[in-house]
Amino acid sequence: MIRLAVSGAGGRMGGALLRAAARADDLKVTAAIEHEKSAALGRDSGEIAGLGKNGVRIGADLAAAEFDLLLEFTTPAATLAHLEICRQLRRAMLIGTTGLDADAEARIGEAARDIALVQASNTSAGINLCLELVATAAAALGDSSDIEIVEAHHRDKVDAPSGTALSLGRAAAAPLGRDLGKDGVFARHGETGARQPGAIGFSAIRGGDIAGEHSVLFIADGERVEITHKAGDRKIFADGAIRAARWLAGRPPGLYAMRDVLGLGGARAT
Figure 1: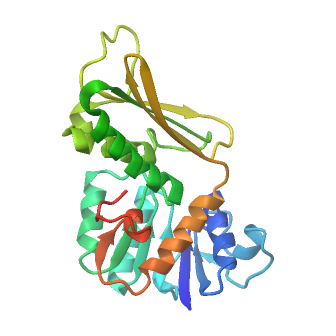
Figure 2 (figure 1 turned 45 degrees about the horizontal axis):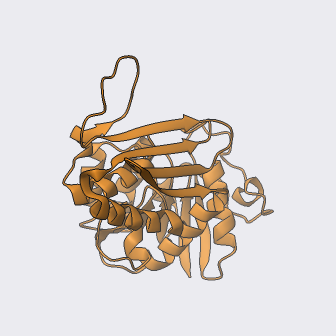
């Protein structure tokens, strides 16, 4: 039995993770974590998730919890704090948090020397398949197409473009020898001039309760190829996280990706 800790247990994604774990016979949620000012502290995590009482009350101290593996889909600050605790306790961790800067990425890489980590901007099987398709399309179409990425999320998402959109951008850039730091275009307004060769454009939509939609467009003269993924429910991300948790349990230290979990090969974090 794998003992899970769920970070952000009082939120929408935390609730989806709790419900997904409850459907699994080989997993047991033994800790539910929230930030110290959360209104959910002290409440039964099962009740908040709509499962009925499960006896696991939401707390703020991960270090005092009993768990084998942490599911982390929260904020960069919380993720880094919990990363250090997992490293100290030698506990595995799935990181689905986005908006991490270069320093945070470096700290995750350092922690992977001591603990097993899966890092994924998106845990759905479908989007990770799309990453492979985008790389294949970019290699095949080369420089003959302009590349644009459009993503849409709910009104409460705080980072843009989404981590998944950036992963898709990197998947398109790699076969072409491009770098998003130089070739990524993240805003257009006013007199922008003509589109620059090699640019990879990003557009972000925020509104309503959109769980997540991503499209990568390869636009050439006379034809357009679109690779699109639409998430209708956070359940797909939670189910992917549970699949990753099963795969990660008992693995040696290292930084893994969903493509490893899905058997797509390679070791690139997505």
